[in-house]
Length: 207
Image 1 (cartoon, rainbow, N blue to C red):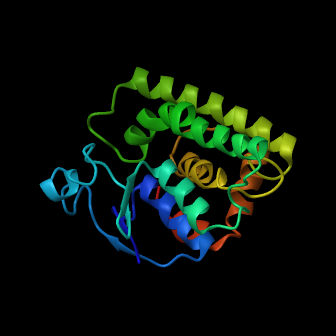
Image 2: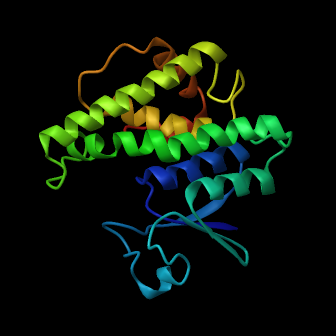
């Protein structure tokens, strides 16, 4: 059985958990990370030298990096619906997954840590404001994209890209600061909530 190493509150672990629900894939999960087994333990470092969750073990195959993991799971156990084989369709899914991991993720990191997690190390007012502004800018890009597709981030239909992007959208709504109205994003948030995997591992009261 697939083994997932990482605490269930981690956004990157939640990508993997949601993907497993979409694929109907059974798994076992072990708690690793802050507050649980330490990821700098030798046993964990032997699996991921970066000391970060998640890590999966699928038989004798070990893999880290959350987006790589969910791509692997969709390739190994999916039917092509989440992660299409056709090159241009797959490239569009990859584009939005990579955008979430780089541009969007970096923009919200400081503001989220300051406002949602109340981190003492993230209380510089100028840095919070800059992060809010960047985050709002990138959410505006997502708003435009969803207005254009009328459905999901890679196109009209649901895809693997909606998992990382959907989790970031959850953080947008769960982080307390003044936000502009983004009606297409709000409708997308509600549309994703129809999916069992998102209700369990995304829009579940955990930011």
